[in-house]
Length: 352
Image 1 (cartoon, rainbow, N blue to C red):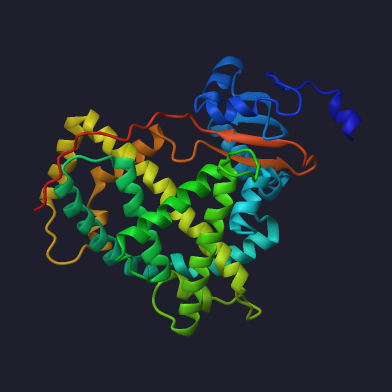
Image 2 (cartoon, rainbow, N blue to C red; image 1 turned 90 degrees about the vertical axis):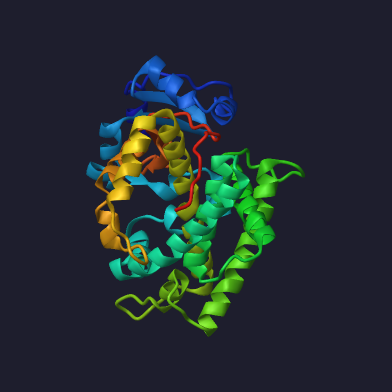
Protein backbone atom coordinates (compact mmCIF):
# COMPACT_ATOMS: atom_id res chain seq x y z
CA UNK A 1 0.00 0.00 0.00
CA UNK A 2 2.83 2.38 0.88
CA UNK A 3 4.64 1.59 -2.36
CA UNK A 4 1.48 2.19 -4.36
CA UNK A 5 0.82 5.47 -2.54
CA UNK A 6 4.38 6.68 -3.17
CA UNK A 7 3.83 6.59 -6.94
CA UNK A 8 0.98 9.06 -6.73
CA UNK A 9 1.77 12.75 -7.22
CA UNK A 10 2.14 14.78 -4.03
CA UNK A 11 0.71 18.27 -3.56
CA UNK A 12 3.01 21.21 -4.34
CA UNK A 13 5.19 22.51 -1.52
CA UNK A 14 8.46 21.84 0.27
CA UNK A 15 9.72 19.47 2.98
CA UNK A 16 12.19 22.06 4.22
CA UNK A 17 15.27 21.06 6.21
CA UNK A 18 16.06 17.46 7.18
CA UNK A 19 14.25 16.26 10.33
CA UNK A 20 12.82 19.65 11.43
CA UNK A 21 11.35 20.52 8.02
CA UNK A 22 9.70 23.95 8.14
CA UNK A 23 8.87 23.77 11.86
CA UNK A 24 10.84 26.89 12.83
CA UNK A 25 9.07 28.98 10.19
CA UNK A 26 5.71 27.54 11.26
CA UNK A 27 6.30 28.42 14.92
CA UNK A 28 7.79 31.88 14.37
CA UNK A 29 5.68 33.26 11.52
CA UNK A 30 1.91 33.60 12.15
CA UNK A 31 1.37 34.19 8.40
CA UNK A 32 3.16 30.97 7.42
CA UNK A 33 0.03 29.07 6.33
CA UNK A 34 -1.35 32.09 4.49
CA UNK A 35 1.87 32.58 2.51
CA UNK A 36 2.12 28.89 1.63
CA UNK A 37 -1.46 28.71 0.33
CA UNK A 38 -0.99 31.93 -1.64
CA UNK A 39 2.13 30.44 -3.19
CA UNK A 40 0.91 26.90 -3.91
CA UNK A 41 -2.88 26.92 -3.73
CA UNK A 42 -5.44 25.47 -1.26
CA UNK A 43 -3.58 22.13 -0.87
CA UNK A 44 0.07 22.41 0.21
CA UNK A 45 2.71 19.85 1.21
CA UNK A 46 5.16 20.64 4.01
CA UNK A 47 6.93 19.06 7.00
CA UNK A 48 6.28 20.54 10.45
CA UNK A 49 6.43 19.37 14.05
CA UNK A 50 8.42 16.31 12.93
CA UNK A 51 5.70 14.99 10.61
CA UNK A 52 5.06 15.12 6.85
CA UNK A 53 2.05 17.40 6.58
CA UNK A 54 -0.57 18.51 4.07
CA UNK A 55 -2.31 21.85 4.56
CA UNK A 56 -5.85 22.06 3.15
CA UNK A 57 -7.53 25.48 3.19
CA UNK A 58 -11.06 26.70 2.67
CA UNK A 59 -14.67 25.61 3.15
CA UNK A 60 -14.41 22.56 0.88
CA UNK A 61 -11.42 21.23 2.82
CA UNK A 62 -13.18 21.73 6.14
CA UNK A 63 -16.25 19.93 4.82
CA UNK A 64 -14.11 17.05 3.51
CA UNK A 65 -12.32 16.51 6.83
CA UNK A 66 -15.09 17.39 9.29
CA UNK A 67 -18.08 15.92 7.49
CA UNK A 68 -18.02 13.86 4.32
CA UNK A 69 -14.79 11.94 4.97
CA UNK A 70 -14.30 12.40 8.71
CA UNK A 71 -14.11 8.63 9.34
CA UNK A 72 -10.85 8.53 7.38
CA UNK A 73 -9.11 10.82 9.88
CA UNK A 74 -7.91 10.54 13.46
CA UNK A 75 -7.73 13.62 15.69
CA UNK A 76 -5.73 11.75 18.31
CA UNK A 77 -2.96 10.81 15.91
CA UNK A 78 -3.05 14.12 14.06
CA UNK A 79 -2.04 16.42 16.90
CA UNK A 80 1.63 16.69 17.88
CA UNK A 81 2.93 15.06 21.05
CA UNK A 82 2.73 18.36 22.91
CA UNK A 83 -1.08 18.35 22.69
CA UNK A 84 -1.31 14.79 23.98
CA UNK A 85 1.01 15.48 26.91
CA UNK A 86 -0.42 18.84 27.94
CA UNK A 87 -4.14 18.19 27.39
CA UNK A 88 -4.22 14.51 28.33
CA UNK A 89 -6.74 12.00 27.02
CA UNK A 90 -9.53 14.57 26.81
CA UNK A 91 -12.36 14.82 24.29
CA UNK A 92 -10.04 16.89 22.11
CA UNK A 93 -7.86 13.82 21.49
CA UNK A 94 -10.43 11.05 21.32
CA UNK A 95 -11.87 9.29 18.28
CA UNK A 96 -14.76 7.04 17.33
CA UNK A 97 -16.85 5.31 19.98
CA UNK A 98 -14.69 6.64 22.81
CA UNK A 99 -15.29 10.20 21.65
CA UNK A 100 -19.03 9.67 21.24
CA UNK A 101 -19.40 8.06 24.68
CA UNK A 102 -17.43 10.76 26.54
CA UNK A 103 -19.12 13.54 24.58
CA UNK A 104 -22.52 12.22 25.65
CA UNK A 105 -21.41 12.39 29.29
CA UNK A 106 -20.31 16.00 28.86
CA UNK A 107 -23.51 17.18 27.17
CA UNK A 108 -25.66 17.72 30.34
CA UNK A 109 -23.45 20.71 31.13
CA UNK A 110 -24.56 22.30 27.84
CA UNK A 111 -28.28 21.52 27.74
CA UNK A 112 -30.64 24.44 27.24
CA UNK A 113 -31.69 24.72 30.91
CA UNK A 114 -28.07 24.61 32.07
CA UNK A 115 -27.16 27.41 29.66
CA UNK A 116 -30.06 29.52 30.95
CA UNK A 117 -28.73 29.13 34.48
CA UNK A 118 -25.29 30.31 33.39
CA UNK A 119 -26.56 33.62 32.01
CA UNK A 120 -26.94 35.38 35.37
CA UNK A 121 -23.35 34.60 36.35
CA UNK A 122 -22.08 35.81 32.99
CA UNK A 123 -24.02 39.07 33.26
CA UNK A 124 -22.85 39.72 36.83
CA UNK A 125 -19.19 39.16 36.03
CA UNK A 126 -19.37 41.21 32.82
CA UNK A 127 -20.95 44.14 34.67
CA UNK A 128 -18.17 43.98 37.25
CA UNK A 129 -15.52 44.11 34.52
CA UNK A 130 -17.28 47.02 32.79
CA UNK A 131 -16.95 48.98 36.01
CA UNK A 132 -13.29 47.98 36.21
CA UNK A 133 -12.66 49.11 32.63
CA UNK A 134 -14.36 52.44 33.26
CA UNK A 135 -11.98 53.03 36.16
CA UNK A 136 -8.93 52.00 34.12
CA UNK A 137 -9.80 54.27 31.20
CA UNK A 138 -7.21 52.73 28.86
CA UNK A 139 -6.12 49.10 28.75
CA UNK A 140 -5.24 46.17 26.51
CA UNK A 141 -8.45 44.53 25.26
CA UNK A 142 -6.85 41.12 24.81
CA UNK A 143 -5.53 40.96 28.37
CA UNK A 144 -8.79 42.15 29.90
CA UNK A 145 -10.96 39.91 27.73
CA UNK A 146 -8.76 36.98 28.69
CA UNK A 147 -9.24 37.70 32.39
CA UNK A 148 -12.99 38.11 31.95
CA UNK A 149 -13.55 34.97 29.91
CA UNK A 150 -11.32 32.92 32.18
CA UNK A 151 -13.18 34.04 35.29
CA UNK A 152 -16.53 33.30 33.64
CA UNK A 153 -15.39 29.87 32.47
CA UNK A 154 -13.89 29.01 35.85
CA UNK A 155 -16.93 30.19 37.82
CA UNK A 156 -19.42 28.39 35.56
CA UNK A 157 -17.41 25.18 35.54
CA UNK A 158 -16.50 24.90 39.21
CA UNK A 159 -19.04 27.13 40.90
CA UNK A 160 -16.18 28.83 42.74
CA UNK A 161 -16.09 32.62 42.70
CA UNK A 162 -12.73 34.16 41.86
CA UNK A 163 -12.56 36.84 44.56
CA UNK A 164 -8.76 36.84 44.67
CA UNK A 165 -7.43 38.93 41.75
CA UNK A 166 -3.93 37.54 42.27
CA UNK A 167 -5.19 33.96 42.00
CA UNK A 168 -7.21 34.79 38.89
CA UNK A 169 -4.16 36.39 37.27
CA UNK A 170 -1.96 33.42 38.22
CA UNK A 171 -4.37 30.82 36.87
CA UNK A 172 -4.85 32.83 33.69
CA UNK A 173 -1.05 32.99 33.30
CA UNK A 174 -0.89 29.22 33.71
CA UNK A 175 -3.29 28.88 30.78
CA UNK A 176 -1.16 31.27 28.73
CA UNK A 177 1.93 29.15 29.44
CA UNK A 178 -0.04 25.99 28.62
CA UNK A 179 -1.24 27.46 25.32
CA UNK A 180 2.25 28.60 24.34
CA UNK A 181 3.57 25.11 24.98
CA UNK A 182 1.11 23.44 22.63
CA UNK A 183 2.96 24.60 19.51
CA UNK A 184 6.46 24.70 20.97
CA UNK A 185 9.30 22.24 20.54
CA UNK A 186 8.87 19.41 23.08
CA UNK A 187 12.05 20.21 24.99
CA UNK A 188 11.69 19.95 28.77
CA UNK A 189 14.63 22.22 29.52
CA UNK A 190 14.73 25.12 32.02
CA UNK A 191 13.37 28.32 30.51
CA UNK A 192 11.88 26.62 27.44
CA UNK A 193 8.17 27.22 26.63
CA UNK A 194 7.41 23.49 26.84
CA UNK A 195 8.96 23.23 30.31
CA UNK A 196 6.85 26.17 31.51
CA UNK A 197 3.79 24.55 29.94
CA UNK A 198 4.38 21.30 31.84
CA UNK A 199 4.59 23.20 35.14
CA UNK A 200 1.47 25.17 34.26
CA UNK A 201 -0.39 21.96 33.39
CA UNK A 202 0.50 20.40 36.74
CA UNK A 203 -0.64 23.52 38.63
CA UNK A 204 -3.93 23.65 36.73
CA UNK A 205 -4.62 19.94 37.21
CA UNK A 206 -4.01 20.29 40.94
CA UNK A 207 -6.40 23.25 41.12
CA UNK A 208 -9.08 21.45 39.10
CA UNK A 209 -8.78 18.22 41.10
CA UNK A 210 -9.31 20.16 44.33
CA UNK A 211 -12.47 21.71 42.86
CA UNK A 212 -13.69 18.28 41.67
CA UNK A 213 -13.28 16.81 45.14
CA UNK A 214 -15.21 19.75 46.59
CA UNK A 215 -18.08 19.14 44.18
CA UNK A 216 -18.10 15.37 44.76
CA UNK A 217 -18.69 16.13 48.44
CA UNK A 218 -21.10 19.02 47.83
CA UNK A 219 -22.73 18.98 44.36
CA UNK A 220 -24.20 22.24 43.08
CA UNK A 221 -25.74 23.62 39.89
CA UNK A 222 -22.41 24.31 38.18
CA UNK A 223 -21.13 22.47 35.12
CA UNK A 224 -18.66 20.39 37.12
CA UNK A 225 -21.44 19.02 39.35
CA UNK A 226 -23.43 18.07 36.24
CA UNK A 227 -20.40 16.22 34.85
CA UNK A 228 -19.90 14.38 38.15
CA UNK A 229 -23.54 13.25 38.20
CA UNK A 230 -23.70 12.30 34.48
CA UNK A 231 -24.12 8.60 33.67
CA UNK A 232 -24.23 6.66 30.41
CA UNK A 233 -26.73 3.95 29.46
CA UNK A 234 -24.73 1.43 31.53
CA UNK A 235 -24.76 3.62 34.60
CA UNK A 236 -21.07 4.47 34.23
CA UNK A 237 -19.77 7.97 34.89
CA UNK A 238 -16.47 9.76 34.44
CA UNK A 239 -13.58 8.72 36.67
CA UNK A 240 -11.67 11.25 38.75
CA UNK A 241 -8.87 11.34 36.18
CA UNK A 242 -11.36 11.79 33.34
CA UNK A 243 -13.20 14.55 35.19
CA UNK A 244 -9.96 16.46 35.72
CA UNK A 245 -8.68 16.25 32.13
CA UNK A 246 -12.12 16.97 30.62
CA UNK A 247 -12.52 19.97 32.95
CA UNK A 248 -9.09 21.22 31.89
CA UNK A 249 -10.18 21.02 28.26
CA UNK A 250 -13.45 22.83 28.97
CA UNK A 251 -11.60 25.63 30.76
CA UNK A 252 -9.11 25.86 27.91
CA UNK A 253 -11.76 25.83 25.18
CA UNK A 254 -14.14 28.00 27.17
CA UNK A 255 -12.03 31.11 27.23
CA UNK A 256 -9.15 30.96 24.73
CA UNK A 257 -11.25 31.16 21.55
CA UNK A 258 -13.79 33.54 23.11
CA UNK A 259 -10.97 35.89 24.10
CA UNK A 260 -9.79 36.02 20.50
CA UNK A 261 -13.29 36.65 19.14
CA UNK A 262 -14.11 39.40 21.68
CA UNK A 263 -10.83 41.18 20.99
CA UNK A 264 -11.46 41.08 17.24
CA UNK A 265 -15.00 42.35 17.91
CA UNK A 266 -13.69 45.36 19.87
CA UNK A 267 -11.16 46.11 17.16
CA UNK A 268 -13.81 45.98 14.43
CA UNK A 269 -16.14 48.32 16.34
CA UNK A 270 -13.32 50.82 16.73
CA UNK A 271 -12.57 50.59 13.00
CA UNK A 272 -16.23 50.80 11.95
CA UNK A 273 -17.91 53.57 14.00
CA UNK A 274 -21.12 53.34 11.97
CA UNK A 275 -21.47 49.65 12.92
CA UNK A 276 -20.72 50.52 16.53
CA UNK A 277 -23.42 53.21 16.50
CA UNK A 278 -26.00 50.86 14.99
CA UNK A 279 -25.19 48.15 17.53
CA UNK A 280 -25.60 50.65 20.39
CA UNK A 281 -28.87 51.90 18.92
CA UNK A 282 -30.24 48.34 18.93
CA UNK A 283 -29.40 48.01 22.63
CA UNK A 284 -31.19 51.30 23.35
CA UNK A 285 -34.42 49.93 21.88
CA UNK A 286 -34.47 46.90 24.19
CA UNK A 287 -36.60 47.09 27.31
CA UNK A 288 -34.72 45.11 29.92
CA UNK A 289 -36.10 45.36 33.42
CA UNK A 290 -34.17 43.14 35.78
CA UNK A 291 -31.88 40.29 34.79
CA UNK A 292 -30.88 39.54 31.21
CA UNK A 293 -32.64 36.51 29.71
CA UNK A 294 -32.24 34.29 26.67
CA UNK A 295 -35.31 35.98 25.16
CA UNK A 296 -33.50 39.33 25.38
CA UNK A 297 -30.54 37.85 23.52
CA UNK A 298 -32.83 36.67 20.72
CA UNK A 299 -33.87 40.30 20.15
CA UNK A 300 -30.26 41.36 19.46
CA UNK A 301 -30.39 40.39 15.79
CA UNK A 302 -27.99 43.05 14.52
CA UNK A 303 -25.44 42.28 17.24
CA UNK A 304 -25.61 38.61 16.29
CA UNK A 305 -24.95 39.50 12.65
CA UNK A 306 -21.93 41.59 13.65
CA UNK A 307 -20.50 38.79 15.79
CA UNK A 308 -20.94 36.26 12.98
CA UNK A 309 -19.18 38.60 10.55
CA UNK A 310 -16.30 39.06 13.00
CA UNK A 311 -15.99 35.28 13.29
CA UNK A 312 -15.95 35.00 9.50
CA UNK A 313 -13.26 37.63 9.06
CA UNK A 314 -11.05 36.70 12.00
CA UNK A 315 -10.87 32.99 12.68
CA UNK A 316 -10.78 32.14 16.38
CA UNK A 317 -8.90 28.96 15.50
CA UNK A 318 -6.62 29.32 12.49
CA UNK A 319 -6.11 25.62 11.94
CA UNK A 320 -6.92 22.14 13.16
CA UNK A 321 -4.94 18.96 12.73
CA UNK A 322 -5.90 15.39 11.95
CA UNK A 323 -4.07 12.25 10.82
CA UNK A 324 -5.06 10.26 7.76
CA UNK A 325 -6.20 7.02 9.37
CA UNK A 326 -4.36 4.69 6.99
CA UNK A 327 -1.09 6.59 7.34
CA UNK A 328 -0.83 7.79 10.92
CA UNK A 329 2.67 9.16 10.36
CA UNK A 330 1.23 11.91 8.17
CA UNK A 331 -0.74 14.93 9.31
CA UNK A 332 -3.38 16.99 7.53
CA UNK A 333 -3.95 20.57 8.67
CA UNK A 334 -7.15 22.30 7.65
CA UNK A 335 -6.79 26.04 7.72
CA UNK A 336 -9.03 29.08 7.63
CA UNK A 337 -8.03 32.48 6.32
CA UNK A 338 -5.88 34.02 9.02
CA UNK A 339 -6.62 37.54 10.16
CA UNK A 340 -4.61 39.96 12.22
CA UNK A 341 -5.94 40.97 15.60
CA UNK A 342 -4.80 44.07 17.44
CA UNK A 343 -5.04 44.27 21.21
CA UNK A 344 -5.45 48.01 21.76
CA UNK A 345 -8.35 50.08 20.49
CA UNK A 346 -10.07 53.14 21.88
CA UNK A 347 -13.62 52.25 22.79
CA UNK A 348 -14.83 54.47 25.64
CA UNK A 349 -16.58 52.51 28.39
CA UNK A 350 -19.71 54.13 29.78
CA UNK A 351 -22.02 52.64 32.38
CA UNK A 352 -25.75 53.24 32.29
